[in-house]
Image (cartoon, rainbow, N blue to C red; front, side, top):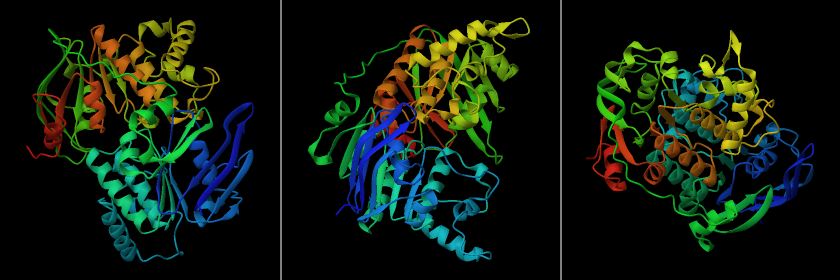
Length: 493
């Protein structure tokens, strides 16, 4: 008997049918993958199981009994937990307070015992936390880990993980799945929503494919190959992303003896020297927390640095963030919610965000509304952002569609240097390829791009060259060889 059985689920939002007669059966103790393109209905289906949505029609059964959850609180009480792409972390609280929030056992708690239990759960998953630190000190990867621990704190028996490794390094991702396998062996059930097919092939027992709100297939992972699964997801055969060789004759970005001080007063980037040539798409590989964020923010101008940094021959040390944007620096931010969008604003207003002082967007003292309308439509269509209109609040879009829009905006206004931090975060196979093709195209027109991704395979597939950062030190491997780069990432070479 299935521990989870969703039968004939249909979900309508007005005239839009997000799910059309979809069924899902998950066995106890399985790692079960749910895959599909952005907008396929994966997250909507999971939110129904989690009690956050009531289906228009269909039934939800758990442990053989039909359920009618009125809210997520009911599902949590039934030992179902979900970690979504949007974290529920309160920055002002400590990590320990966030872990316990909503699951307190009484008005008075034994904090020493809570800390001991928290350490035990973190150790079980291979994580480490400073429980007294404010959650605002966590990067997205740390926040993701804390969200996963919250499920264990609540003794979740059925765990829904929506893109759990999107912000994790390869090492952390592997460690997470080893821990999930142990949890499954102990009786937990894990439903994994992911775009990373290697995770499905390497760790999951069964896979369900959705496309356009419809069920395409449900089968054992052993019965399908990775290329076959990719074709089922996108609905057509995929060709190999073409490799190329670039020999730049001129540098877009040149840094020498470049150092950045971190939030705790440590040297987060240590004497880095490298160049990004015109036409180059350069990946920066590294385990999370090794100086990537500090490097990016220093290049953008939101953090100071020591040393030399030149953009097309101009000294960046003398330039504000505004100056750098006007000089052609564009960013695909790591955390789109905090750094790239205003969720309550429309897509049209978000199209101007960061560009409001560029001459092309100005009309006297105000915004050139005609140009703004033209650009927002370009950003929407470039990577096929699914929305009702440019007036729709960007916060109402799925995470993947927000990412498509943010990427299109960064590539749309004559970039000279693109700084992209996890540019394919939350994107499906086709959208990931489209974004990297867009990055390649702006590079072919003379820009340079520096890409951080915690998915090493992504960098190997799409980038022309790879740098490695470890402990704030940047090295340049001689070739794009996975084993060598992996050793450099952990300081084993």
